[in-house]
Image (cartoon, rainbow, N blue to C red; front, side, top):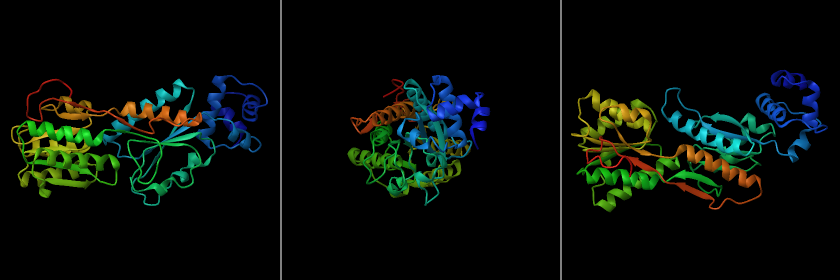
Length: 340
């Protein structure tokens, strides 16, 4: 891999590429952007200019997110995050590379991702897989901002939704609709977002004086339809009259199971989901769901990282963005305003 390959990818001359990488002649902003993207894409590392480029800014940011199944609606969340990140970075002249990792890898280290080993990244926006995996940051010597999740024992800047409060509002809405046996379906509590939603569910039950019945709770689930269907089957068997599903994929699986079994929503079982995507509005009945600002999370995280790169400390360092409830028909109460 050399200058000739970078020139071929960018459509620029070898001379222009050489001057850009060695800083021996001014190169247009457009050409420099093309060269940086090609370098990030290929992993090319110029011998003589490596140290100089390390002291200068590459203006390249990495967004590192978990990999998901192709048809998993969680992808919608990450696409929204990506959209917010791209918009905020482009405003400030930064380029973006995206890398994925497996949350099932117990030995995952952020510093082992190939794109971060090329010394061409100014900073990282990271969606961590586990709130207990602070050690995954080993080997990182650039600024990092966490998006959507926290890591225990790590005081890195972060931006999340108000997951606990959102879950409590969802349970409160179901209770105001007259439901008393409100079940919970959620993912692994290793994810801080899932942990906070479960905690919000618990706190809401306690505040409302409703029973905490472990037979109505299914967590530590994989984020797929079959897990949700199995959990819904169990909650129906144990007499739930409402379900709070704390993830879009899990909500979809609950709807699928209840419809197949002829269980009427909301007459027999009321439902509130999490994440408000197009499908929640076109099913029958339309689903009441928590609407979080994923795009806003991405944009805010990117701006926090840019602050760090400028030598400033983001204030506040831990940002919590408010969510709303898109109130439709599945919760069984008065439809009222579109959002709460």
